[in-house]
Length: 112
Length: 115
Image (cartoon, rainbow over all chains, first blue to last red):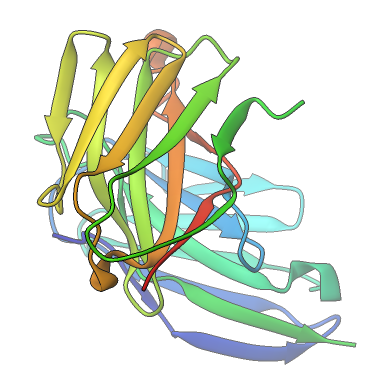
C-alpha cells in the first residue's frame, strides 16, 4: 500500500514566493526522499534525508523530518516558473527490501 | 544518451494482446523496478529485482510478469492486456551498495493505451 501522503494535493503560487509541501508516512523508515516530476516525464531525485537527521538543505530546497510524527516537509524558497512540477515523497519501509513507496504527490504551479 | 532507456515511449494496443515494455540501463545498478502511474494515484510498484536471480512482486503484480534478462535489462509483460492497464509505466534503477539509500533513477516512461 502507498506509504506517503502529500499535502496539499495542489498548490499555486507566484514567482518569488515560497512553496511548502508536507508528507506523512506510516511505518518506520531509514530515510525519506523527495522527487520531482515534470509533466509526463520521469521522476528526478531531489534530496534524501536520513532518519537520524532533522533538516537538510540543497540549494533552494529545505527538507525537514520529524520521525516522532512520521512527517516531512519540503520547502522551495524563491520559487521560479521552472519549479512547476509534481513533487513526491518516497520512503523505503524497513521491511520492504528498500523498494520505495511513493505518495500521490503535490502538484505545484508557479506563475510569473 | 539516457542512463535508463524505456522502449517504446508510446504504445496503443487492443484488449487481449500481449505486450512487452523494455528497460535497459547503463548505470551499472543492481536493482531495477517497474512502476505504473495513474492520475490521482501516484506511483505504484509492480515488480522489482535486486539482481538477475532475485525478482519480487510489488503492490500490483496481478496481470503482469517480468524478466531480468541481464543486469542491465528488465522487461515488463502484459500477457493479455485489458483497458484498466492503460497508464504511464516507469522503469527505475538503484544502487543500494555503499549506503546510497536506494535513490532511484527513472526512465522517461512508456505511455500505454489499451483499447
